[in-house]
Length: 559
Image 1 (cartoon, rainbow, N blue to C red):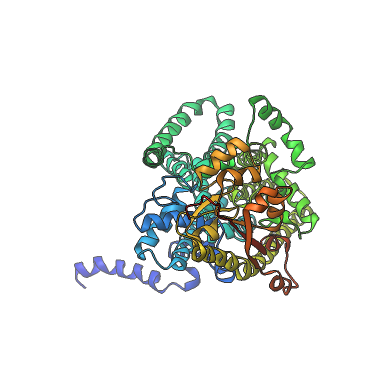
Image 2 (image 1 turned 120 degrees about the vertical axis):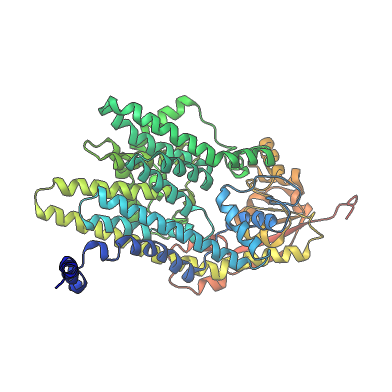
């Protein structure tokens, strides 16, 4: 054997076993990374929910009317020629505008499905980030899968990802913010902050709360960390400003203000003094247990307040919400869990005392933080409990909570499926009927539920509370929420009213009764009664009947 062969032979012999190693002995590097399975797992529940329910949210059509106008060359406006900031989330309008433009301003259903897929992909990314956070900060795989499972089956997170809302963007960038804080990464933190603002302009409340909740104990316990942390915060703030600043500047130039009109409309009745806010803040821990607050709605299905859901579910969810909101006071909590809990407390207080709005689309970021907090609290308990029976009991309670959440989501999915088959087609029909009967685009419509009716009628809307109408805001500033006074001032050509709204408007108002005549009624109550099993029945019943009134022509009318 030649010297050359002798030198090379041992190398060939050493490579043999690596090739012939049994499959069961493969190293971790050759296995499929778990993260590759987590991402599609995170996107799948949303797509299944969308396929089953086909739920298209009412407010999707408010935003989509703006997006479609942009795609067809009329600008990012609700009404042609009127520069009004009639949407809330930049991403929520820009993605549909892009898809509508790519499809030539047609195929509205396809645009919604593209948006659903986009939201599902963002939720898949959120799940992957959560998995990475959980595997590092939670003890054992059980709590990791509990956190992921609870997040993926929560009804409000899933529904407001596929029904046309921006929930998927908010929870993704909020999770990215937590991930960046845990890794002291100012670049990712800046992108997380900016993404929150691109997703929803009031998201700075959640981003700021978790950042403060993460920073406070670190700075308090070790003053040496203050300077490096402040430096990272400055870098993150600069990145966020560079990333979100262009939209802020453009919106100010285009609309005259960066504040979305829906925020203006919903904030007209909000009046708070600093002293009252401070007093409410001190009392809030007790209020969450003793009075009606956003904590009651945290883990309940959307629109549960209409009725039809067991009271014990509300109480159970309220207790979980209180624990999640107050866990930041517990000693020994990890910084990430404490930060998430601070976000829960701040978010619930914001919805309860500052905006006094418990609408379900506000809750996904708080639910995310609450699930992280409760998983963290459970992890701390498991590491400190000495008796196996207590650990088994805690794990069993956690698993039961996950199953309860899944059951609520399944029941809500059936509710939304029925609603999408009966209620929403009727509101679409009202819009198309108005478009056919109206005398042109200049006709005006007074209505509360703006989405379907406003989109399919394509008329000028005097919606209450005024998300698309500067005229309604001006009238409300003068007359408040007095519907008869608003109608007398605005003099809409058409009124679309539910029965209780009709009673509210015409009760003891003889002049209004003489000015309008009922011309149509849309009723699907008989079809709805055929469904014997319908959890939360009161919610679809709320929109089962509409009356349409037309303004009588006056002698001096030009029409």
